[in-house]
Length: 483
Image (cartoon, rainbow, N blue to C red; front, side):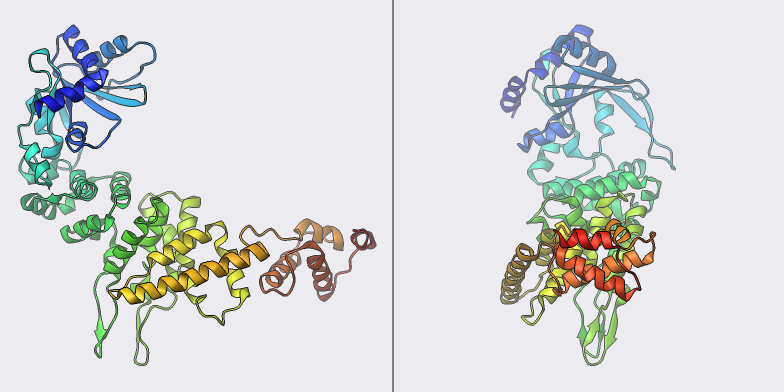
């Protein structure tokens, strides 16, 4: 391992630069944390953390001096840290520290410390390794908690007693689950029990920090693993109760329904195979979120969840607001997909009219392909034949959507007649009638009664105006006839 580490240090000149800078100001320095972990796991990273036994800011200034004017140095005196942006890399420098915590805060009391003190304060053994950049021990791995062994065994473990680690900084509970999910590691039993015992401490963490970790879990290859860990340790109930409410199967007269929690996780994993878009993944998480609230039992048909798509869409803004997710077009996008996620399956029937297809395309707009991705992910069954059948049906729907869109151009629908035209043609003031006429023209186009073009829309506008007691000006009638 020593030779491999040396070879890597020689492959990037920053390590010899930091070593030289450390010698110049007479401090010990080390590469630490996640970069060392990822190096051993052969994962690429552009972020490198350096720790020195002394002032991290002074070391960064010396490194910046050696690198030259292209190095962009930022110092943070209140935190005793500094960062350098250079050739696409982010280098962070900090002095070795020891920390102590109060019961009601995750912000530590920080003092200068040794390398050993600094490694003791790390969250997990796999993040507590360091590589020496000192002349006498250059390239040596400093691994006081057997992080290498835990990497080989694919284990997440705290360096100190789990209760101390998680009570000091409860965010580490979420980080443990996030790392386990991203790296496909197990959480060591005592470490997991430490999370179970301290879940209530998550209350001192800001929602922004919690949601940041949650999003990283969602962006992993198989987020269902992380959500199951969150569920079983009790954290999910505290940070996202609506999802926990999906769990469980109720039976009446021998009739049950699927467990919507595990169904949602399967849909999430399915969609992750098709897209890495965070918001499309959130739509998978929330597509059935209102099923518990709409669950009813009927003797003839069994369990129903009528209207769960509409209620779920109404819940989306509140969930986003509470989780400190963005309340902009990304929220509206998720809300739209939740509302429409049942529409495509209804189009499988051959008797469904083109009007129904047009209306769905109109409501989905440019997100119609993402809606179809969500619907395909929503196909979950233990029967491969059923899955195959449903996917075959969706190919027919996709083809039909393509044909209708190519013919009628509904996806980016622009009304052929504007409100301004209606005002000018009938010489009226802005009023509710204008919106009514526009909506009736839109409905006529979507229903296929008229084509999506100006002349037919203009004629219908005249008819609708007459119905409302309006008369067009002679000027606009003559101008339209001359076109």
